[in-house]
Length: 149
Image (cartoon, rainbow, N blue to C red; front, top):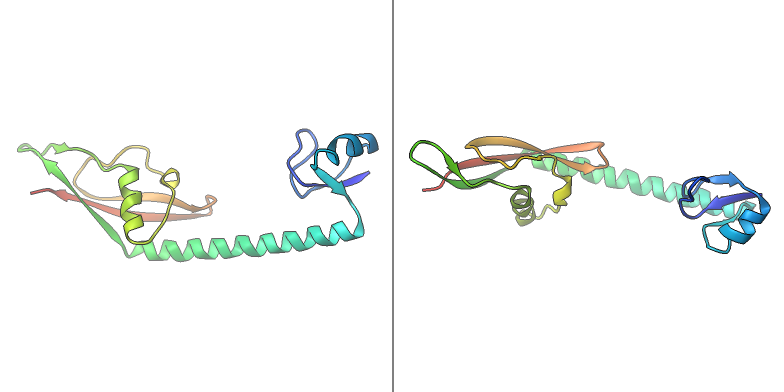
């Protein structure tokens, strides 16, 4: 029996795939647990429509990420750290602080999307990379650290 999977099913397939499964498995497990629906002309049409909407939504999200990347190119975020007499820097700039500076400018990025493992602990400009959309669109955030007076 052909079914359309509504969820990822281990050893069967992923969501929105059309799979051939045993009749008993489909009726006793997949349908009962709302993991699949029967493959019919109507359900095929609905699936195709959902896939088109999903593709359009994905394209829109990618376009928005591209626009955000272009917006970030012209921005530099300033931070200040205390510096000792011999040039040692006291403190660091963490990913959380970078995300907060972005949020102050109206840009919301999850801190887990920042691709900088080590905190920034030196004076000068550092480029921090951020995954803006599914590893396809990578933005660069310029972080400038100067001496606190």
